[in-house]
Image (tube, rainbow, N blue to C red; front, side, top):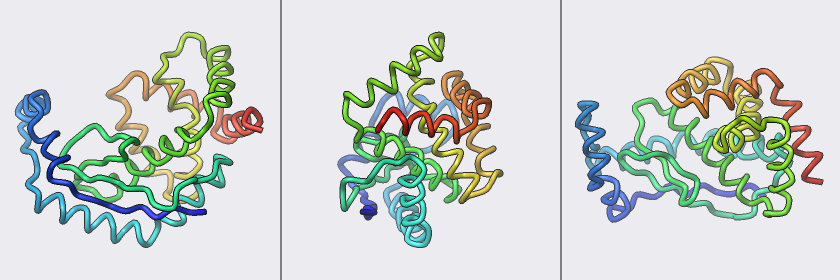
Length: 200
């Protein structure tokens, strides 16, 4: 089963981010303004159109690479003006570049699919990571499988340029950068293969 992504704008939900004091301070320091509702809705309509063309293939490829199956027919994706994107509730921010937004959404969807794994099986993977990468942070380890799947998807579907952009954007976080470095060194196929062995 391949789910349908249903894009939604909720003024009440968006207002939680718009009114955040910490976010206001961040945007002021960066000399940026929180987008108006009409801007967010226009962006949501734009990403929805792009997703209609390539979304099904992306979701099929994620499942094929990871060996995991989607369990819901419909997944709601909330679009807000600005936030740290998250997988639950699935939430993305307005972006100036629609391909960047698709890449963010894809990242969060892999997180979403990853969260469907039973605790028992996920602990097997965590135990393996703890033994192989004992000095790495929990955030780094949490992104090794995700980035392996995403790297394979980039190389097969979106191209190396978008992969390099994602890796470059991760340089601001030591944890994210390390996870990409590990995936690049080990190779995505090797990591995914080990993951799938443990999930049997």
